[in-house]
Length: 125
Image 1 (cartoon, rainbow, N blue to C red):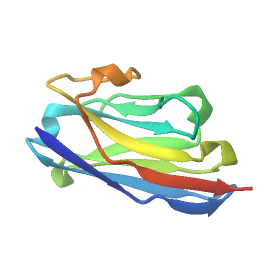
Image 2 (image 1 turned 180 degrees about the horizontal axis):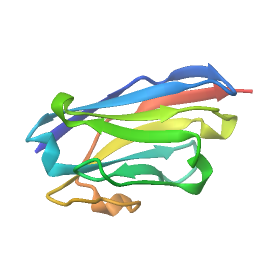
Image 3 (image 1 turned 120 degrees about the vertical axis):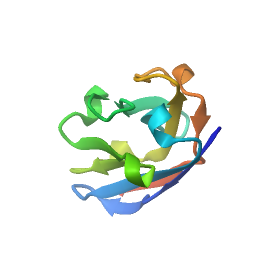
Image 4 (image 1 turned 90 degrees about the horizontal axis):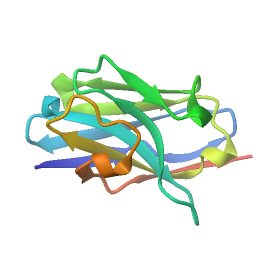
């Protein structure tokens, strides 16, 4: 098993930046592909970004392409989500997720076995 703890959320003005962190504990972090998802009030959880187990491949949802970047530091058991040019529509709870024993998790939440508790991101206009 792996435990995931997100941090770095907060309140930011439109156009600002935040960096989310997700620290993993438990089994070897390099065994897991990881992803970030978000859920706004009254909406379904949606895919934001994914990164392969090795860190060599990434994928982004269309609304965040060119603004967000996912990267991981396996030595620190941490995956990050750098968010630039934030918009009010980015307001949501952001969740880190891990998919075990696969190189790539992808955009489907069902592919992920473990989830963090989430961190709130609020973007004011």
